[in-house]
Length: 309
Image (cartoon, rainbow, N blue to C red; front, side, top):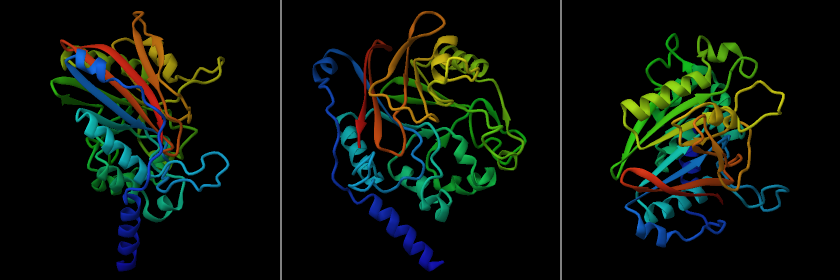
């Protein structure tokens, strides 16, 4: 047990040692900020899959990219620029490296807590050790989980995973709800047990109405692990379809399909209004950043980009 604790503490310490940082250029927004009253920055990741360390310098696809320490350094530099930050994750935190095999998700949750994540949703791989394994690691997460279309009432996660959460950032009220992909066919039944999957479009309409009308949120975010887009003949619901079929959602932050977008896609919702859809690939090689500028409680403008870690 002592050896295990030593390895764990060493791994966590190494991961947050503050290594060097390389990032893509981000347009200066100082002039815009000066003209508006409030500025909110959304930072997000998805499908990190237990990638704690950066890729090797000779990796064929992601040379010298990623790593928790670099992401932590980048996040802190953005927080110094603008303290009104929400840090979100769109699922599949678990599974992909020996860190998960050895620690079962403990290290991932502890490091995310050290980076001060605000909220996450569950991906299908977050069930890989079963809902009991997920429950065992929850005390290590100093942030919440949301999923509105997974009904956990007859499971050990009942009441622990909420449908949504609201935040107040400098007087801007933000509502965030979660959506998960259908588990049947992706996850062994014994791992998700009595979890019930509900239609994400219907659930999203309910969530958006609650957050906009009852909670009076200025910004509604869907934290989705449905996937960005599938083939045209696919009946599977995805983020782009969700955006078109719903209303009152301002931003969909996605995961599951490992889709690399340089900037958010702007689509029209069921009322013809703009909704942003974003996803930043996988393995922690990118950090998504979306800046909202508000005038009198309403979003007046936005800027978004994927930042290379």
